[in-house]
Image (tube, rainbow, N blue to C red; front, top):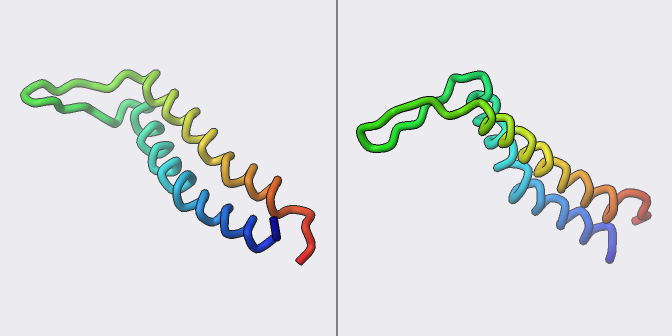
Length: 79
C-alpha cells in the first residue's frame, strides 16, 4: 500500500466516521447538561443524562478511528 492510498483511506474515514461523530458528540453534550428533550407523539420528556454521557464516549471513540488509520497507514512512509 502506498502513501497516497493511505491518505485517501484516511480522508474517506474522516468524512464517513469523524463528521457524524462530531455531531453525535455535540448532541450528547447537550443531552448530558440537560438541554435536550424528546418528543414522541403527544408525550414530551427529558432524555436521561446517562444517554448523553454514553453518546459523548462513543463519539470520542469514533473520532479516534481516522487518527488510528493515519497512524498505521500514512505515518512514517516516504513518498
